[in-house]
Image 1: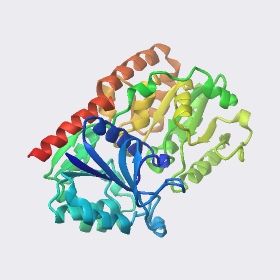
Image 2: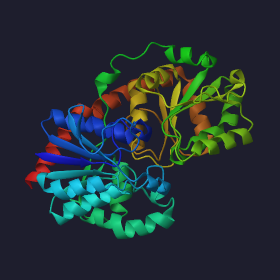
Image 3: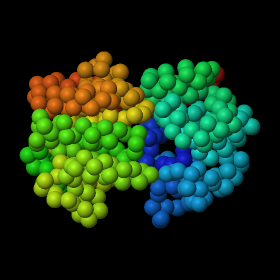
Image 4: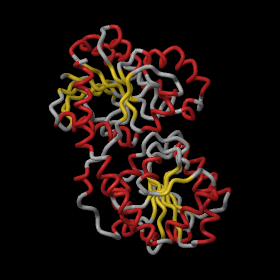
Length: 411
């Protein structure tokens, strides 16, 4: 079984968050299960010394990072990924593969891959990863609507199957768009062994000593409007009335300069903050701060943040899955998520966290309740770790996906 995976960005492009990490983990698992796997991607988000337009080995996976036209970055954070070298290789090699797995929809790489698959009668699977949620397609609809009508609709129509990472995504996309394709519902996963040995308590505080003795409320992810960070900031004045020890830590890379919007909001609400993502360039009285921007945290520092925090929060306006939520739960950090997070229904069923409406009252009440109730946090911690072990082990998910791919090809 020869499978080609095509994605606009790929590991280790850390700035693009969970989808890149989860795809790489899946690919490594497929490789272990005997799948002959090749990855085509672009060099977007990669370091300048990355080898482009030729085959390289990435964790035992055959990968090619194709150069793309950077001038088209004006179309958005990730650009359109227009790549002539990738086009040539697809045209030349597409018939060598039994199945093609395509990540994402709003870019050139997915469009050109689907075109050659359809032309050469090669079955392909599309994994939209939350990009077709209704409230996502409504943003910048002036350019998305015509693109969907003339390109994305054909990509979906001709797909052999569509892979959703949550039941919520399937219900929002497959049924709303009345798609006739086969579908797969399989979540993203994490490598459980990576969380076997966690950092000692206090390691994160050592790096940020002004957080000592604080009840840390942690957000970790890309700084984007989708994540609903503004809702937590707006709720903070009400939250700190009940708990003056609260400190909101915002960790992650900026996207589309959204951080500036958050800073405007913070200043409007007259909240003290410190921005430590740029070597203490802006600390606004660090000892009085109730909000800290850390910038991007690598894997080790991310785990340190999970271990030293009291509650993890993700009040997304749209989120098909939420890798950071699963990682936080595996680290024993209780979570609060909005109903817009794809796995929220499963969290409710398993009592693995608190699910909120995106209202200030609901967010405030839930934060104060979870931080103030030690027994509740203990119960949520136990349930969430069991929930992760039973549902998000990448070894089990990749084995299941390889079996599904085999079945699809044989049919």
